[in-house]
Length: 303
Image (tube, rainbow, N blue to C red; front, side, top):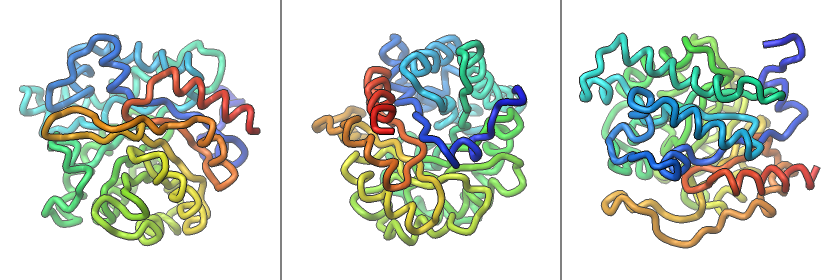
């Protein structure tokens, strides 16, 4: 880090930053098999060079913020593959190191967001799109805290508490991040104007309104049309910068393990989101480098 580098919070005070797109679809485009329950996190052990290459593809596309390959990583999941706790901690750290390595020498500042996916992602059964796992807030906090501590120790610029399906898990994640020393963003997955578990978005966003550790709040892995409405709600309720990175508009079929429906991701329309408060804009599942390039160009043209 140099004297001219800014924290992510400082950058968001003045700039609109472009996030990367879906890491999994880029890895699949590179020929990787992600059928394992660890999903892209498996490659932290078995193919780290593929993760670094995927990050590099998004940097070439114009991304300014990289999200790590730790979304589906957990100590429990690694243990099922015979990875002991000490090595699992190193793999969490490796996710940050690979993003940093990809960003080295690009000639501009790049921020790294350590991905903390929901409990449902670790189950690998699509339940992050439903929430309400039958666990208490305290139980969810106990699950997430070791993951957050391992990622925070590697020094990302921010922790991305992402694809959160309900307010119980949001509360647990914010509790688990207390004292970690790294700022966070909180991002829900939604359907219409509610979380996946059915809570009104205004209620969900309000959890972060008075929390100074939360530098951005918003939505991800949702339909672009739903994100349209959520951007203004998040800004109005919290007064914070908004993070928004929808998927392609297609819908994930967990039973068939495939995507269906139409692509509705429109970079030109998304370029209007900064006027409503968005400061971090990118793509989630099924959004590759080509669409991130188009988004970066659209955002620049709209400034």
